[in-house]
Length: 112
Length: 117
Image (cartoon, rainbow over all chains, first blue to last red):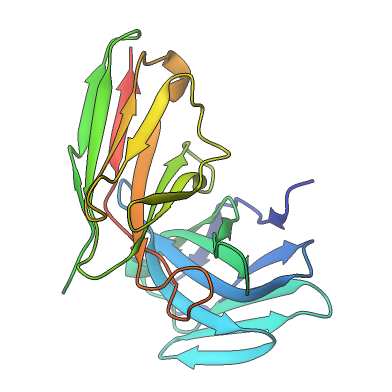
C-alpha cells in the first residue's frame, strides 16, 4: 500500500460545478499538506499549502485536512474549463529532510 | 516571477546512450530536488541537495544515474547508459529552506520529457 492514495479519475464535471478532490494517507507523521496543479506537459504548480488540521481558503479553492481520518480534500467552487488539469496532493513530515511524498494525481476535466 | 529553469524541454535518445539534464533553481533556494514522473503517476524523488551536498539519494539508481550540484546553485542529472524504462518526465524543484527550516515548499520547473528509443 502506498503512503498516499489518490484516485486517478478522470473526474468530469460541467462548468460551474463544485469539485471535490481527495487523498488519503497512512503516515501519521505527515504535518504539512500541499496541493499542486499540473497542466499537460508542464511541471506541477503549488496551489495550496496547509499545516496540520483545518481549512484554508484562497479564492475559489479550499483545502481541508482531517488528520484524525488521515484524509485531505481540495474543493474548487465555480469550476472553469481552465481548471482542467491533474491535481496532485503532496505531504511531508515536520522534521527530517522535508521531502514531500506525492499522490499519483487526479485528472479533472471541466467541460463548458 | 522567479522560476526554476530546466533544459532541454524534450529529449529523444537511443538506448545505451548518455543523456544529461540541467536545472537552475530559483535564486536563493538552497534545496534542490530531482524527481522522475512516469505518465499517470505522481513525481518520485531521485535526489535531494542541500547547497552542494546530497541529502538523500536513496532512490537514485546509482549504477546508471548521477547528479551533481558543484557550486550549490545549478545542477545536472545524468543517465548513462539510458534504458527504455527511463522514458519519463524529469522534474527539478527547489525550495528556500531545508531540514529544520520553514518555507520549504517546493517549486517545480517545466521538466524535461525524455523518450528513450
